[in-house]
Image (cartoon, rainbow, N blue to C red; front, side, top):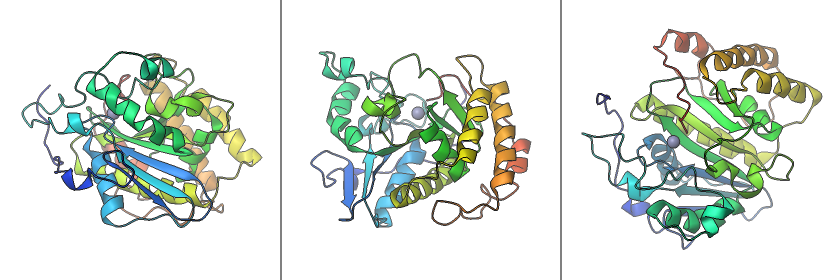
Length: 309
Ligand SMILES: [Zn+2]
């Protein structure tokens, strides 16, 4: 693969190492008011810099929850620190894919690697969160998209946020290990768990990808800390065809994803004037302009890689 333009580069995260939880690179802010606990997790993959930008944005801007708790974590900093601009795809992981090791079997097992040690360290952080946003990016230059298990609780929130507008729904999980968002109760369809979603924000090294990550982080962490989305019949009815349309079942994703995107566009138009459960509306900007879809359609688009997350 040729070296892409590197608009985003790593920055020194030493100032974020200590955190305030006793676990390196984990920062937690408790409002003192009852409410959900939201985890915004960055750098599950070491070269996916958009999460780093979003996490440092939340921390540097002093974003604090009004209710509940916000936790901001940098997951695989060890891999991140190996970044080499000449080989920008090689710092994704050191040994294990940190987004495949979240089964009790592996976490409780005797295998060892930097990623397994970090996952064991982060396990209580992930387990404590009601809602999880795991920030990722892709090697190929594709439209941003959500990835989540096919639970309505996830679809409702991703739909309500509206961007990204493409949803990659996993009816049967990844089929190759357990990702962060399916650890413990978040991987069980019929559980009291909250939302757990991946946002694939665009190509690893693009500035626009970081903007998506920042926006999604602010919207989801703000919205989830206020109140849960309405579970009205319309929302549920919307989620069902969405799952059908985006049900890739391991096949090549492009066609069903486009169907899902079209479906979502229709849904969004129908929902445009409804009261939103979330606070505020997305900032108007290049990426989130009302005609963002049309603009996105003109961008060169590759296929969504099956092994994106
Ligand atoms: Zn990733």
